[in-house]
Image 1 (cartoon, rainbow, N blue to C red):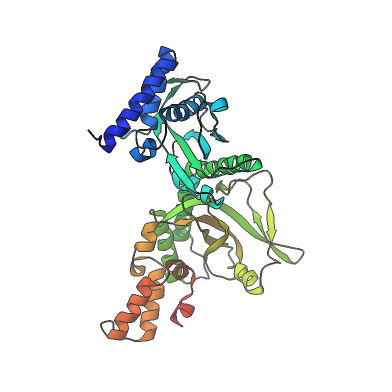
Image 2 (image 1 turned 135 degrees about the vertical axis):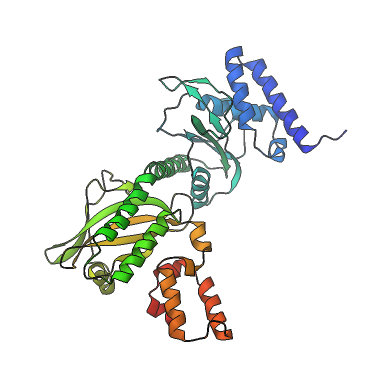
Amino acid sequence: MLLKTPEIKASLVDRVLALVKEKLPPRQALLAGRFVVQYYGQVDADDLAERGVEDLYGAALAHFHFANKFTTGAPKVRVYNPSLEEHGWRSTHTVIEIVNDDMPFLVDSITMEVNRHGLTLHLFLHPQIKTVRDAQGELKDLPAPETGSTEGLESIMHVEVDRQTGTALETLREDILRVLSDVRVAVQDWAKMRQAMLDVVDGLAKAPPALLDAAETGEAREFLQWLAQEHFTFLGVRDYDLVSENGEDRLKAVPGSGLGILREKGGDPVSASLAALPPEARAAARKPELFIITKANSRATVHRPGYHDYVGVKRFDAKGQVTGERRFIGLYTSTAYSASPWDIPLLRRKVSGVMKRAGFLPRSHMGKTLMAILETYPRDELFQIAEEALFH
């Protein structure tokens, strides 16, 4: 009788569990068995059917032993080419093993980094396992996960990629650790970064810049409020002072203001000259406009590939002179791209202004055509473009 796919998977896992009981002491076998069940719990049966039982056992036990000691906040990453002699199992691929606190964006971010290295992803296991550890981080128990609870969960990731050798293994490991660090600080500081934007909203309401148009400032405030309502994935925030030194404009980071991926690091520059920028870009820094909305020149390492979205909110003194900016680095969410521009503060002024200047009757053929063009206009460009340029 032919076995159905779920039955094949169950049979393979049962055979792995039999090896666990055969080869390990009872207490260790109990924990390892629970680990194996969760390790292969969500894997497609076809991926398991391609592998021998000894290799399935070896892969799971290698990761089980690697995860035996773990300290929260200190991710563990191993990149190696398993061999029967050294590791007790074999694979034609390079294997990445990760033990990390469970948090958002891990799968997307690790996949992005693998792709950045130009590697094909052959297998990705990501069980989220509930653990109990002692004060030294030693694994003591693997209780059944509670429905809806994320407390005590760890991300156990097994990733197989094209086979690498030599220094490429350590380079890949270091880059994976860097990405995990970026994910961690972005997740840890998310609430603070969102609050930093809401603080700007509150400040604009209480003390709007005196020389700026009140209606535009109100629209800008609503746009920032809209971004904070799950339309922007915050990845980094930092304050900058705009100062003149020896006749040259410089942006100086405000110490202690960095959050997320813009947290201060030992080698961070404290200031950056604007002299290397084109004249129009240098002039924009002093221009009495509230926003700088553009793309950053750095690529995202968290959540989604592409260049970071950059929203800079300028600060002004009593005379209306620009004194600095609060810089937000992140990514617009999918809902920001799918919403109608007529429902998005700032964009609605642009598209309504263009429709009004065009002079077409809204229900006419030309009016409907122009409206359709504006609805489907590339969203990234629509965030950045000035109304005058959009009209032309």
